[in-house]
Length: 388
Image (tube, rainbow, N blue to C red; front, top):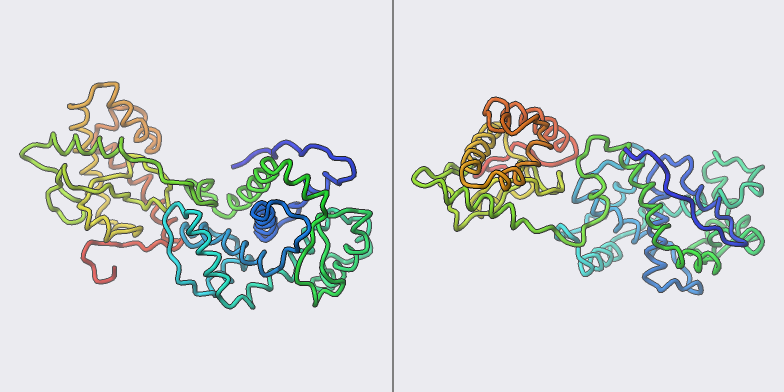
């Protein structure tokens, strides 16, 4: 868990920096984090232009695209009361993307969202553009009941607009009438400040969103890597070499695929993540096994049937025995350090003991399978099954 707040922002004459740092106080849903991050992204995309309006529709599209990866690809929980993922699901998007969600794919995702019926999703704009600015107007809101939902929101546009030049909140609205608000207009001083300090402010907002998501996904592995798409997947050349040399050294008794039983070829295999990469978000060898390419493609991001756990341990154990024989002690230690760390084994000797290895896998994998299944990953996969 995260334990401390990042350093405060640089001071700026005339701007209420303390209010900025208080944006996420008393936050019970993801909306403020996603809304603010969407605003930062739109400012950056439009070269920090303070003159143009930022329409609610544009902000909504950016918010939905910002959570698509974490929700659709990694199936993270946003909280029981949070509706942003429900609004995203309701769009019924026919959209797929790679695990790195390239810039081109991100643009395509925004277009797909923009071409959907956004009537329900736009309800996000009923409150978050107004709630976010409370820290800037505490004295002016002293007599307003902030707990009176809709009554408070209806009062905010006129209050903010009337104090915009003196109090200088982040932005004002294009109407004093809540029903007629369709866009925000940034205060130019804040735009300059956000542009100057965009790195630290973006990192701070991400830090707070991560802390929020950790509370709602406490046991999810690799959570920091699941909120935003990686720029690219890391190479698995080292892992491929490990298994290729093991398969070559197996000789007349070839190792076999745990899903089909067919012999594994050192010249033609794929690396399969036993627990899907989209759940664990890593390429550690303890979770990687060779499989025929067609089998790996069929498995996709499904979770294997529990019957395959012993098969997994059998293959890993055989591979480790061969690896101990063919690699130098230094290379072997380098290849197996993640086994020992992630499976919580005390030594190399226990790693090479079948009973210890099986128990370590059972303790590690079975709870993760339960968690992944609860998050929506399909479990019980078997090659050739009619269900998949």
